[in-house]
Length: 106
Image (tube, rainbow, N blue to C red; front, side, top):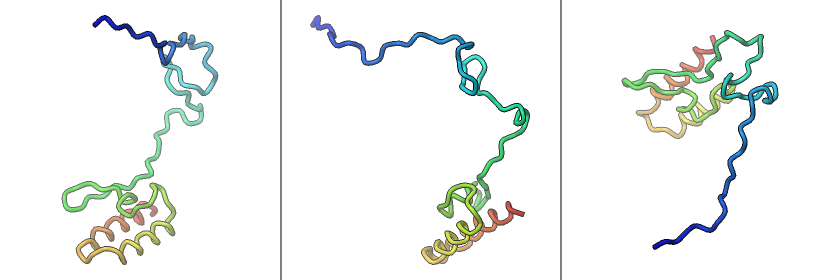
């Protein structure tokens, strides 16, 4: 079998652009992402709240089914819905997740 592929390539390689032509705020492979001078040296803040239960680490927002950083009202509503839907063995687990989020706010 000496069949050759006669189809053109799907993607043609692009010419590499020099770092000086990269617009401000764009990522350059040589320099990395652009960081605002006011934010240089500051750590990013994690929205997740981790807690330990039964020897495992859990994300409290994920346990309650809400996005990380959700408002206390949203978290409380989700907690109350979860309590109504869960069995008795899960109440302590949900309560631990809820309290972890409340303690983060204080």
